[in-house]
Every structure is written in C-alpha cells, then in structure tokens.
Length: 283
Ligand code: AMP
Image (cartoon, rainbow, N blue to C red; front, top):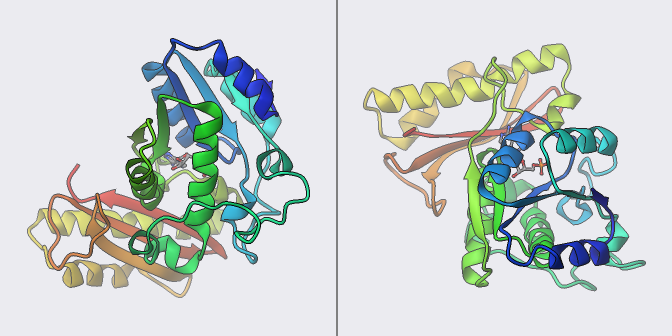
C-alpha cells in the first residue's frame, strides 16, 4: 500500500495495535542493500513500513538533492515483491509544512552532540546529521515502530541515531544490518548510478584499502598511523581521499592502537562522486 499522508499512515498504524512494527527509512532508488534491511525487518516484525523520502534538510546547498535518483514506481514494485505492508512516501511539504523555510530558524531540529558530528562525514557535510536526526525522529513519531533498521554502510549515522534514541528515551530498538556489496567488493549505493564504467573500477579502491588494513591488522599491525599509511599505495590521481579513520566502533573515539572494537571508515571522491565505505577489524 502506498501512502503519502501522515494522517493516513496514523490511521493504518492504529489498526496494528498489538503487532510488532518495523520501519526501514530510505531515500528510495532501492537496491539490494535496502532490500537486505527490508528482509531483516520482515523476519523480525509482523508489519513493515518502508519510508521513501529524499530529505531536503540533510543535503548541503552544493550537494545532489535535485539530481538524487527518484524511482518511486520501481521502488514500489520491489517493496511489493518483498511483502512490505506500507510504503510511506511523503512530499517535503507533508513532512515540513507548506511554505516553511527549511532551516532551524523556523523549524525544530534535533542536533546530535558535536563530538559525534565533528568528524568523518559530519566534518564536510555540515548540518547533515541534524537533518538526518530530525527526519528520523519525525519518522519514528509518525510510524511509531518497535524496531527500526539501518545499514552499517552509514556507520556514523547508526552510531548517531543510537545515541539520539538513548539520550531522548525513544522506545525503539535500532537494528544494524551488514553492508551489501557487489561481487567486485563495491558497496552498493544509490549514488553508484552516477559512476561511469571506468569510475566503477576506480571506486574499488575503497574496499581494497579497507581489506588491506584489515589483513594487516590480522597479521599483527595495531598502530593506527601505520595501518592508515598502508592506504597510500592504492591511491592514484583518480582518487580524492576525504578521510580515512580508524576509531572505536561504538562511540567513534580516536584510538592510538587498533583493537577488535575498531572500525575503519573511508570517504573518497571518484569520478566526481563522493563514496563512503567501512569495515570492522574483527568480523
Ligand atoms: P539511503 O536510501 O541511502 O538513505 O539508505 C537507506 C538505508 O539503507 C540506510 O540505513 C543505509 O545505511 C542502508 N544501506 C544503503 N546502502 C546499503 C548497503 N550497501 N548495504 C546495507 N545497507 C545499506
């Protein structure tokens, strides 16, 4: 069932009083990565809602909000195949009100702590996680799920959403699902659509760097600076590295020495496309 309005969604939700409800928040252009979250939600819950909303307030002024792929008909088909109960696809005005200027001058925002946003993607995408937390909390309030499903692909996002849920006493369990990759190792992403064939090959550098760091760690290298250093032999002038960090996976604290609780995170621009990926050092 496709719903565009909050009112209709709420009416439907009332009928699911004693059922376990799962929410999978997405921006659409669904691929196997999203479908893995939906499958997990179907396994865990009685009813599954997938939201499809390209959230304007999480994009910076020079980012790809306008050109972000919008493929609602295909998304619906995929969701129907997976047995999704509701696809909730509101318009920006349904979410933020007609005529509201989308800024924290006029709207209530949820701002995660500086410690969590002043690093990794938050450093270059200023305000991004305010936009994410705001829309996620709104979706939580609209759908009132028991469980919400997020991908490890956006690892910083999951840590921040978990922190929000804890700090604001949101009665929802956050379930993180593993990264789905192409056979080549490239992590699936809606933004892979922007890559040329050549760019797709160059994009393999992200997973190669992560795998190499992981195998060095397994051989006994723990010094974070030394592990990061190993990346440089993979990078060429086709790669514009934004960050490569090895941090504690739960609280994103810096580490001098990596351990089994470390996560390696990378962001790199390839072919003009900003890509992110990550891996835990211990499987
Ligand atoms: P997006 O539509 O990009 O906002 O993503 C919606 C959800 O799907 C987020 O929780 C992402 O982390 C997750 N996701 C995106 N790509 C992947 C992937 N390759 N594997 C697993 N989850 C993913």
